[in-house]
Image (cartoon, rainbow, N blue to C red; front, top):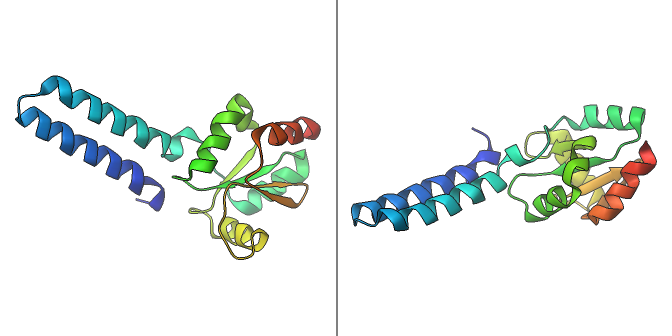
Amino acid sequence: MTRAWILPLMLVLIGSAVATALILQGNLGAAVAPLLICVLLAGMNSPLLFPRSIGALEAERRSAADGRPIVFWRPGCKYCLRLRIRLGRSAHQLHWVDIWRDPAGAAAVRAANDGDETVPTVVVAGRPHTNPDAAWVRRQLSRAR
């Protein structure tokens, strides 16, 4: 199991423990809400919500060919989640690199952010932009077409 699944797994376990305790107390109806909330939070913080990640080198190669931006992200990052949600369907047109899965991606982010792994970092035409607005990213994507 990778780091990306630790937070979602913990959220499901916590929700299950709370629901179990409530069920054992005879509160079946009250057990549903915390379990549902924890499962939803787990889903939002899991890699499942994001388009499939590729390696940094592959993303650079694809970006050079098609001009689409590269998004460096990591699971559990609320700013990455916000960007992903605000991009909507256009998020699938970008090249996503999970820095927890790809050491080259983590190194690229550190190089762009003075040694910090600050995400999301979006690279457009070789220039990094840290935590950009989703509308700006959409404009960059439309220019790449």
